[in-house]
Structures are given as structure tokens and as C-alpha cells.
Image 1 (cartoon, rainbow, N blue to C red):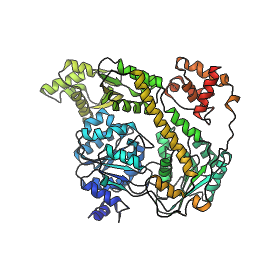
Image 2 (cartoon, one colour):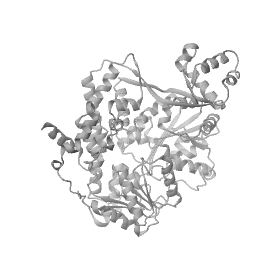
Image 3 (cartoon, rainbow, N blue to C red):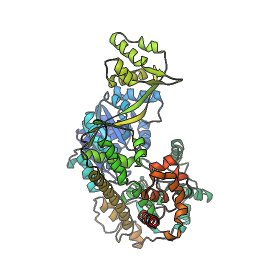
Image 4 (cartoon, rainbow, N blue to C red):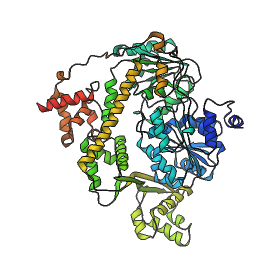
Amino acid sequence: MLKQQLQKYFKFSSFLKGQKSVIRAVLDHQSAAAIFPTGAGKSLCYQLPAMLLPGLTLVVSPLLSLMKDQLDFLLANNIPAARLDSTLARDEYNTILESAKSGELKILMVSVERFKNERFRTQLDKMNVTLLVVDEAHCISEWGHNFRPEYLKLPDYQEEFKIAQTLLLTATATERVMDDMCAKFSILKQNVFVTGFYRDNLFLQVTPTAASEKKNRLLQRIQETPQDPTIVYVTLQKTAEDVADFLCANDIDAQSYHAGMDNEKREQIQNKFMDGSLACIVATIAFGMGIDKKDIRRIIHYDLPKSIENYSQEIGRSGRDGDFSLCEVLANRDNIHVLENFIYGDTPEKLSIWQLLQTIKENDGFIWEIKAVALSNALNIRILPLKTLLVYLAMEKIIRPKLTYFAEYSFKYQIEPNKIISSFEGERKQFVSAVLNHCLTKKVWTIVDIPAILNSHNTDRQRILAALEYFDEKGWIELQAKQAVEVYDILTQAIDLDGMAEKMYALFKKKEHVEIQRIHNMAGFFESEACISRQLAKYFGEHLDNERCGHCSFCKNGRVVLQNTTDLKPLANFKFNEITDEFIQAVTEQFSEVNLTKFLCGIYTPVFSKLKIKKLPYFGILESYPFLEVKSWINDEKGQ
């Protein structure tokens, strides 16, 4: 029966390992988790049930760009699927929502942030969602390699919108992460399906390479078979551009890809790589998640990956057709400090945490409204750590997330306002008049004054928004929302500021330690005195029968040792005043030793953006030096 449905909808003749078990559990109305390696067919575990279950399957992803290939595949098989994102034109967006509400659509893909959108939540209430799919589900765990605070709210959303069951999907979950994410969604142990991480068609090569030799070693490797689809992974955006330029100068068809490029350019490059007209991409980790290209023959890590989890995920993109593929790391210890410095950059200063707690303690009343970007800039805490801090405070029962709304609604009239009003009768006509009469029309856009409407008419905010959405659906207006405001209940203002700031800071330091350790575990993994394939499988809880796989550099040539290959001159050789004076003058009262350390190590922090600090001549001059050593040197110099 299932095989017939598989053939009918997707033209596949058989299931891959583990797929049928997951699909049966989902069709039996059980919540489940599928922990399959990258490229092992996780997506089908929701795609087939979506066609067989009543209602809509809602797929949540950390980034919608991850879903592009999946959506293309579904549409090619005539599966009614769509994704909601900010690039859609209004008509297209509304058409998708109508299809989702009417039952025409079977799969709707959204980013996790979409749940905070007041307009979307209004529409979601009208959809019959029977299955919530959480892609990259490891993001819900603090112990995972890619913790996303927004994911922690997904179990609450599932309950709020009365979605009966959940399917969690991930390729990289250690046993601890697996237990954590399943506990948060109350998934039973017997409904967790793990297929193993071992791939016998991947040759895992660790090649000790000095920094000065990397470009030529990379070029030699690609020149062996220049048309083989290849991804070269680097740490920094500027490295991606530099290496791609070098390859192009040596007649290799290569392009860089990173988060600093505009979406249209990235999509063009991705499409060229997917259709085979571009052979080589030099990318940061911004590229690859959700890419389903079967014939990638090489994954080369020009720089060390961020963690064993990242390494596993990235090499998993190669050889999905089952043919031989090379996964090579051009390894040394030179960029370990760069990886560490990214982590140090995410730890807020204790004073910033204290200031946030003081804001809550002194808030007038028990409703606290914030605009995340403005608060991030005011406190000098990056957005992601700020969200994490707010989650920590919710866990301490100091605050509780209430809702997110938009501070500003505006629209463009598509027909005369009188025609809109005349479409209604009785009390509804009075209500619509009150809404439109309390809007201020400027040159093009009309601003909605929600407080004025509430004062003039006995109604509530939700009815006003529902009316505006209705007008938009009818094509009478073109509606837009701006400035997301997050609303929290303050559960207590009896906060010991010093004690709680210390406790929160300790949590961040613990997280920092875990992430730093993750980097050192990865370096140790590459220097392992055992088969690399076996060690990788063991890390994710899989135990192989054979001591040696026969297709890794350890089995072929034995253990390697990673070296520091670039000599860094002593910090004492730098002229402290010369490289710091302009920064100190620019930041004035925002000065701290930590901010100066971030400046010299090339680490972004919100205050730098406002003050255009990244344009100063010595930004990042010490990016290859250990963060703590630079901080200690600054303290010594300031103390003299």
C-alpha cells in the first residue's frame, strides 16, 4: 500500500533505510523524530504523509533558503506545496494563504520567525494543520551546535494552534541533543528513528597543510578533475572571495558564496551550481543546507569546520548518488583562534545583562514591550545572545513571552475608501467607517492609528487587524506591517540585580566553554589515533563492527598531527596607542576592554555598527590572535 503511494506521488520504487518506519508512525498519528544523515531522505518522511493525512502539513525551518530544493522537487511532482517568505509579491502571498486555508495546499513551508508575525498568526488560526514538521530540530537544544532561541517556543505554538502531532528532522544530533529535543516535544523513545551516520562511499581525508601552501594544494586537487562538482568551505567571507578569485585566475570555474551577498546574487550562483553550469563554489557555512545535489564529488574544508557536527553535516552533502566522493580537510591549527573569537563575541558583558535586568525591574507596570534591534543596540548585545538571554529570564520566571505585534500598520488604497465602507451595512459599516476615518493618508501610504480606532469604537485590536486583512484579501488595499514589538509579562520585579546578572553571565560563560570545547574536540577528532569514519559514527552514538573502514586517511596513512604554521609576532611588538587611539576616541562612553578586544579581533558587536567602527583602519588587525590573550594584553597596557 505505502509503496504504491510512493510510486503514485513521487515515482520512487522503494524506500530508503528508515523512511517506512517513520512514515508508518506519522500515519498512525504518532509524533516522531527522524535522525538520518545528510542526504539520507529525511524530507520524504513528511512529504508522503502530507499527501495521505487530512489537512495541512506545516514545515518549519531555521532558514527558508534551506527549503528551496525541497519545494522545487515537490512542485516538479505536482504536489500542492508553497513557502511563505518576504520575497513574495502581495498577490502571491495572499493566494498561498487562501490555498492553505481552503485545503488546496498540502504542504506549507515557513521560517520559525514567521510565528511571531501577527498577520500570519491570524491566518494560521483559520488553517487545518494536522502535522507540524520541525526541520533542523537540533536547533531547539542548548547542547546542540546551532541553538536557536526561537525554536524553544515551537512546543507552545503547537499547543496554541492545536496541532495534533509533530515530526522532528535532523542530521546532526548527539544522544544528549536527541533526548533534549524529544523531551521538549514529548516524543516517545519508540518513535525516535536513527539510521546511522556511516557512509562507505565517502573517503575522509585529513591533509596537514601549512597556511602558505593551502591555495596551491587546493588548486592541485581541483585540477585533477576540474569539472567535478565541488564545495570549498572557508570560515570568513573575505577568504571565500580571495580563494574564488585565486581559482578563477588559474582557470578554475569558481564563485564565492556568503551571507554578505544579496539574495538575488546568491540564488543565481546556487542555481548555476545545481544545474551543473558552475563546477566549484567557495563558501562559508551560509551555503549547503537543504541543497539536494546528488553528484557532489568533493567537499574540501580550506579552513577547519566549526565543530564535528558541522563537519558531519557538510561532508554529508557529497556523494548522495552513492558514488565515490572525496571529503578533504586542509588542516592546521592557524584558524582555531578565529573560530574561538566568534564564540567570545557572543558572550554579553555582565554590565549589559545588569542593565537589561534594571530595565525590567524599573518598568512601569507588568507589561514589557521591546523592539529587539533597538534593545540590542542600546545594550550592545548581539541579537542571537539577546534572544538567548530573554529565554534564560523566562526560564527563571522573571518574564514570560506574551505575543508579538507590529507597531505600525499602513496601506495603499486600491479603491476609494467610500466604496469600501459602502460594501457593509449596519454595525459593520459603522465599524469600518471608524477604522478608515482614523487613518492618516500621506502621499502614498495611509497610516493606521489603532489607539484612535479603539477610543472611538467599542472593539478590540484583533477585529481591526482581521478587517484590514480582509480588505487586503479583497484587493481593496495593499497592507504592510512594520516594526515588530515583542510583548512580555513581567512575573516579578523583585530582582536581585547583582545576583541575577552574575547567574545569567555564568550561563553564558558555561555556554561559551561548551562551544570552545566543541572546537578543540574537533581538532582532537582529526588527530585521532583511530579510524576517522569509526570515530565520527561513535560521536553520534553509532558503533561500527569493523575497527577500520579502509576509506579514510587514518586507515590509509595513519594518524596526523595538526601544527600552527603561521608565526605571529608577539603582541608586545604592536604599538598599543597607534592601533587603539581612533577606536577609543570613537566609542567614548561605550569603551570597555571587551569592546576594544572585539575591535582588534575583528568581531562585530552592535555598537560598532552605529559608530561605523568597522571602517577604522585597525579593525581586525589581531584576528588571528587568541581573544583572551589580546584582552590580557589590553589590560596590561591600560594598567601602565
